[in-house]
Image (tube, rainbow, N blue to C red):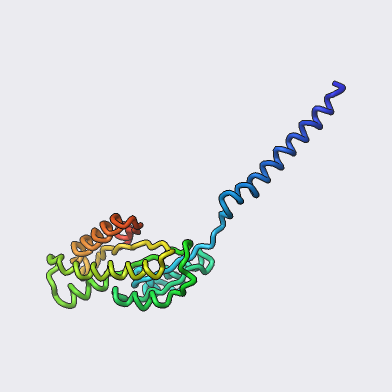
Length: 201
């Protein structure tokens, strides 16, 4: 018993030493090895009303509003309602060069209005999927332009949802074919796709 308090004191020193080492390892060695985990990420929205949907929702409930709030203002929306593929080039021009970095993610949603313009306005048969070929070629050229300017950034594609209203529901077979083209293109180029067609109507 005469060394009991000495053992207790030694045990306390060991506990303090282990605790200090754990703290040091966690906050200094790991941070030096793996870097600071807190990275300021930037998000860029390019496209049409799928992204720029403010006209169809309550004030302040647009996708860009919600993302801006959740990302502490690090969301930059250049998308515009009714945009077609050719319109995205002017959106691309607005992106400052300093946003081209590895922590930037670009979301691209376009093609729906091009399809409506080519099938609805020109009264092309919805069974004629060949009309999609030049549209998707334009899409691929646009993607390459985005990739060239924003070569450090990640690009995520967004497919097209299937409308359920009577006027637009007839285009579902065409939209399915378009979404397949996007999926195949993404698979070939190791890209990520957000399939809103599975969750949005």
